[in-house]
Image (cartoon, rainbow, N blue to C red; front, side, top):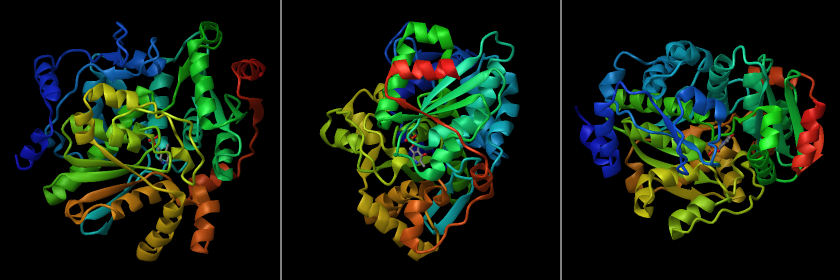
Length: 459
Ligand SMILES: *Cc1c(COP(=O)(O)O)cnc(C)c1O
């Protein structure tokens, strides 16, 4: 097959072992293991339902299927490609038989690839209910969890810390789902007004808590709650953050779709620039490449929270406090999913071969929003602007390749930043307009576990 050389060259020795193992055990059940080495091996449903491993690690699939491009012949809709791609990840699981329906339910909005130039396109991931890419993962997670927990005696409580988009997407996806509650923690003053509304306008099963602190504080509270046995027992907790395997798996599917459609058209693998915060979206792209999708380079665009960029430069992993930027959904100083990346690529050389990263300042984000509008008459959100900026800074040689920039949110969600720069209004997508008309409510709490417990008891 043409192009196969490009793909196989990218497999490192570890991946070849995985491949061989998979070939022998393709009938085997897929298991999930912690990055921190706990003995437990979970089924897909168990790993999805639990969120975080008992030793505090993150779940990784124990084996990697390897696809050939031809395996997807005749499939071009996202739900169909998704079902094919995810089937081995559900092998032996009780949800396997329902995977086609789960995919139809979760991927029920368009994910268009828009061509801007001969070698440049964007992948628009923001046509879901809350106008950001997190709808994809959240809707899939919800479709799985509601099936897994049907008939359970005690309500499940999903605890989610959000720097903006996660909480809205999760709340929307679980809105009014019986037997499952959502508790959203978000940092006061650090999310856009429209984002905040999306966190606070749902049914009674969704509780929105505005925390006196940063996103890192919110995340720390969630971690503390999970580590607290009494808290867990009282509330039957689970997570829906981007550490959840139930969100990562579905995010692989749009990279599979985009790269396959591109390959069919051009006979070439495609490279991606991905706006990055907690590394969930970009990790999914790495996973898609690992299982054989025709993907060449993966470049991470961060805002000025540049923990990852510094790590790739220096080899020192130095998580730090986050700082507020215009691309607020990427304000992460201690990206959790790096633990998975480092688990996949134990050697620094391997990580550097797998990905590169560049940081984009607020000034550059502003310039880029203006520049992209000037060039393509297309408003972009501050997160998407980081990808455009990183693309603009690629070498001419890199630009000889075909690139897809990932557009992670609709610009209307960040109108207070985008509209003054463009000097004109950005049209609201209909789904977002509908949400903004619903009444909102929230509760203020301090950044402590005690206040979180009280708020959840008073629910
Ligand atoms: C969450 C988010 C990101 C960052 O994605 P990660 O998976 O956390 O790296 C980028 N852009 C937008 C709009 C987001 O909501």
